[in-house]
Image (cartoon, rainbow, N blue to C red; front, side, top):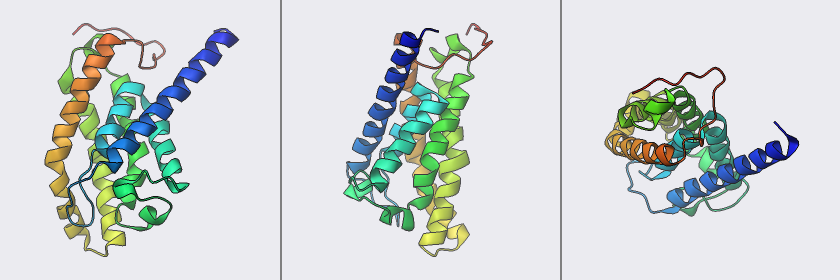
Length: 199
């Protein structure tokens, strides 16, 4: 790979990471639906979409950049909040989970056979929803229990209210990602020794 090509690739990566960090911010400031101490927002849609479209590393970095910008004082968190206060409240677990969920979603989608990635909504849905289950629906309730001083069982029960919306958002992510990968098959990073398997 030439230096020029490498520089161009790095510039593209930076632009994609910044774009999806901005998308997460836009989705965060759209008014959410209050459910207990944590509102339902479109943040998880943007976080998951970043992972499914950009892959593990860039999806992780996009969500991490979003958190860094918000922590630095820009009002990009839910409800227009900013700074470190959201990390001291009941949303802390969800915020910490965002880059991890995006990274895992991207990791799983990267490992889907390339032809099937462009055709199979169910596979991408499964990858995205699994990532959310592992991180968002685990760390989120733990943050609620810690900062809202709720019993652990009550915190996980509160989180159950997010499942229907998360299923819908994961399905939407899978639909959008399938269409984008069909149009731009080179968007996801290529794995070494990856084999193309027909659908």
